[in-house]
Length: 80
Image (tube, rainbow, N blue to C red; front, side, top):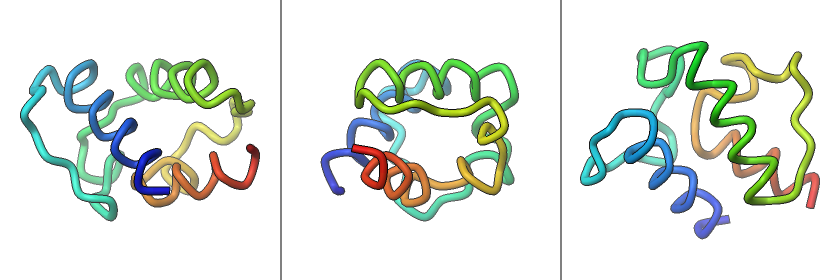
């Protein structure tokens, strides 16, 4: 699960925040804290599908599912 979290954190820091050296903790709120907006959420969902080979439903693109790296990693693991 740590490897998944590291890949997600690196993607968000580099591609979404445009701050490649930014450290994102596993429990940091991504949507609630405004790090990831609705436009970036779609890109993040596509990144997850392409990188980890899992399907993300459009209805899952929300703070209930995508608000922390831990939540995302758990979702990815449950589908692999």
